[in-house]
Image (cartoon, rainbow, N blue to C red):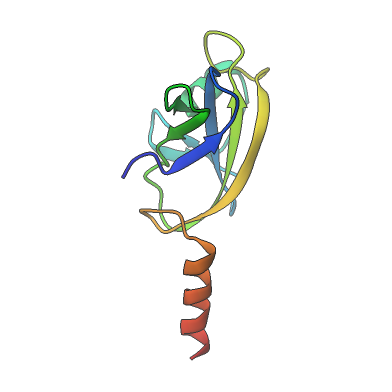
Length: 120
């Protein structure tokens, strides 16, 4: 799977996301491909955890890959990169909580269907 993260912002930005596991506050480390405690938060740590987003040329739509994570609930936080590399001073540009099936985002329709199965 690819490009599961899709957001709209102004064109020409350098954006990235950080993905946090809601159950324990661990952050996805893209280099190690694992969730880890945030520990000391510094520029090097942000650079290890960022997931870059790529703009679909001139549209303002940015896409990136969701981590190879297990089923669960996650917070995806978008940042606008100000300098040459991700840094703690970068400004957040919003975010969202998502439910992840292990291979795709779970939509409200999926959740309603799953709840209906439990009720019958």
